[in-house]
Length: 88
Length: 179
Image (cartoon, rainbow over all chains, first blue to last red; front, side, top):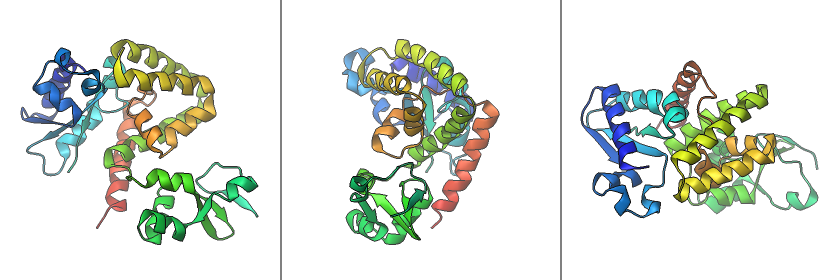
């Protein structure tokens, strides 16, 4: 996943959840600090980004993200990558 | 020895029977309770065969579980792909055509790195025929878990089906992991 693709996921997730504060978890979080050209392939080789929200006590936002731009969704089919909402 | 289908699809030979373990032996190997092994069988996370009234599991499946169980995300992915497997059983031609189309697109989006390697692995699976695809869609092995994270089966399920499957999984997870 490139940084541009991650940014796309974050914009979509933020809009879906109505929350601008999105946390990226896991291997793709490194894209927040470095451009993908500066990273080894292993660091950016994924078609999914794990995301969570600071304010999501019942996991409703994570579920919304899964439902809309998650695995096997139309978003996944269209763009070739997807988000994984992380529940607590 | 009479063996019949549990959640496993293994036809048994004498050599394979030697690889079978009781749930108690599996529990000792995994360092957990026998009941936990039974639960894994019931939840479809550990294939088994029934021998009389007893469950028997394959040593290779047990050792595949030794380093970790499936995470919630991995179980959710497995759940979704079981639904895809159901669709595959109903209409293999359409499902495999969709997967082939997706795979072409995905290889353009992810031309390099580990993801590209998993996509190449999917191509081999698709080329191997429906039985191999069923296995990749529904196996709890770590290899299949990694494969499914790079799935070419988007678009097989309608949004309505996906929503229903995700809702059913949430219910299942709450019940299966209730303290």
